[in-house]
Amino acid sequence: FFALRMKEFILAGDVGGTNSRFTLYEADSIEISSKMAKTSYVFRKTYQNEDVLEFISLLKLFLKESDTEENPPISACLAIAGPVFENKVTMSNRNWFIDGNQIATELGIKKLELINDFVASGYGLLTLDLTSQSEIEVIQNGKISVGGPIACIGSGTGLGETYLTSSTEKVEYEAFPTEGGHSPFAPCSELEYELTEFIKKSLNIERVSVERVVSGIGLVTVYQFLSEKYNEKIEPLVHNSIMTAGDMKAKIIAEGATVKDSLCEQAIEIWAKHYGAEAGSCCLKFYPRGGLYLAGGMTPKLIDWIRGKDSPFMKGFRNQGRVSYMLDDIPVYAVMECDIGQRGACYLASKLYN
Image (cartoon, rainbow, N blue to C red; front, side, top):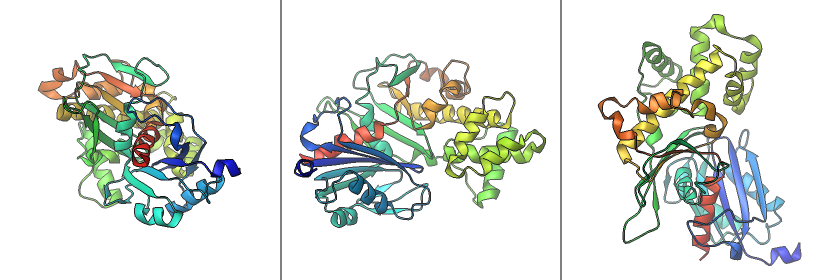
């Protein structure tokens, strides 16, 4: 590996609530372009975050396994699920505090920048091939406006949102961080009002955000509410599997949703309806004539509840009152790739290198 150590590398990372994904690239192999395709990498690894006390231990393990401890990356960009200030972040759904400058000093990385994970996803959108069904599924055809604003919402462990704009002076898009997933949850039925009160009581809070429902963590909360309200509908084997699945509870619920009239199916329908409703709200706020993108790990896995004009997602999406018609011309795409955060982080890491 001596020849490998003499090369210069850049590191891209996508750190969510459940998984941390790292990719190592040769610095001179990356095209500096927002339209870059997937670039060949030197080493890639995904780690589960559960039971990991400190984030830096995962990064140290990655450098060891990639044989770059003695020749660390020149630059790195880590996309983190949480609000980033002064290159520091306290993660929204994981008890980690991450200091980018401290990590850079300890590991010998010359330039390391932390960015919000959905800002990275925003830049990653620009690398997608809209003609590729493996990367994109069209949920709603619309009239795309070249250079128009782009919005992105993604349900994963949490709920992320970002938007991108361009101008005549600057053709390339720029992505901006938001914490839109923490907007208030809007119940639309008596059952959903009961759900809201259940969440308040369970978490000892006075306000419920949409992320408390439209996320992997939220899906588990919805299932727990339904299992208490409709105790007679509990399927013991499925219920026990969910309750003992740790960070994988949402995955078990999704698998159980294929059973008609089950609590799992009902929980997914509530998730999908409010995912659509919040996506519709994004459209009203940003009017993204450049497209609305549905990202996050849950989107491709639960696409059957999103696609189709009569899906729970689309019913929630179109239910925007007297301005519902404004959403008819907005293109809506489901992102079927889970690596757009890494793509965006790679793009920004390459900028740092240069």
